[in-house]
Length: 165
Image: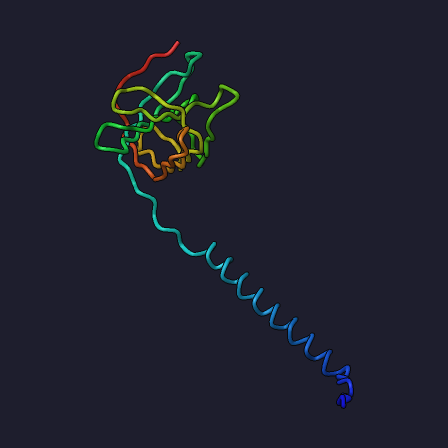
C-alpha cells in the first residue's frame, strides 16, 4: 500500500523572508567585493625606481628649440632617450605621449649598447622644465616586444651649447 503524503505548503512569509535573506547575503558579498576593489585603488603604490639622468638643449627636426632627456636604465649602456620638440621652459607640469602621430611633440627611444634606437610608446611626465634647475619626471613606456620601462628620474643639465637653425 502506498503511503499518501500531504504536499508541504510553505507559508508565504517564510518564502519572502528566505528571498530577502538571499538578497541581503548577495548585497553583503557585493559590498565587500566593491570595498576591496576600491581600497586597492587608493592604497599607496610602491615608489617607482628612480634613475639619474641628463638633460640637454637640442634641436627639433625643423631646427626649432627642443630638449632631450637621456635616462641610463642598465649598466650595459642601455638608455631611454626622450626628445621634446619645444623650448625647455615649461613652468607647469605636463605629460607627453608617444608615439607622436602629429610629428610635432617629440619621440621616445630605447637605445641599446650597440647604439641602435628602437621606438617606445607610452608617456613621460615632467613636473616642469627650467634650464636653471634639476628636471624631475616620470616615465611609463613600452617597447615593440611589450617590455615595460617605468620609473622616475632626476636630470642634471648638460652644459652643451646647441645652436639651431
